[in-house]
Length: 186
Image (cartoon, rainbow, N blue to C red; front, side, top):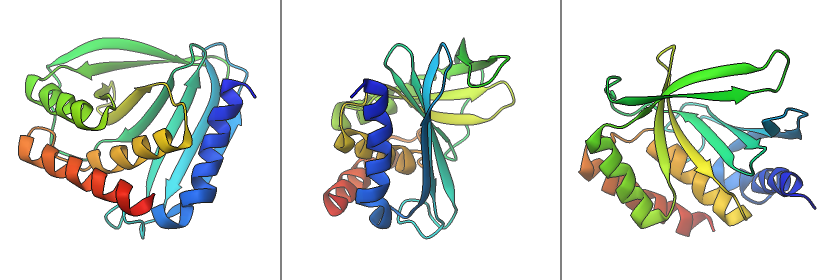
């Protein structure tokens, strides 16, 4: 089984094994023929999920040609300063013509320190991106080598997407909540 097939299988297994506990409404995962993007997945959570605070949420994932997985979710936490960003570009070639997404990777010192704290405790690296249209995303970019790892990423994203990452105490509370949820669900 290829790495792309393994990624797709992890997403499908996430719904099959944890769908009821997580409040997953539906998942889509499929291969694409892009040069940069090799697979796409979406996970849709109901408003009744223990992870969504009464609002349906969606996580989008891309399996990239370099083997990295991008996991993206809208960030609903505190207002992030747009001035503290490194400008970057991402090519999404699901359809022709390919889409070039310009974004700013947040470099605000307080936010970065809090995301480093998350990394130290959970061993997962997250970033905050601000797209040109002002949409703010929380992003995981890295490898996904197991279903358990994907589960940790998904639960972390859902909790962190509503956390005020400008406040250390909120970040620490989120880490405790993530650990408790992982213990409860697995």
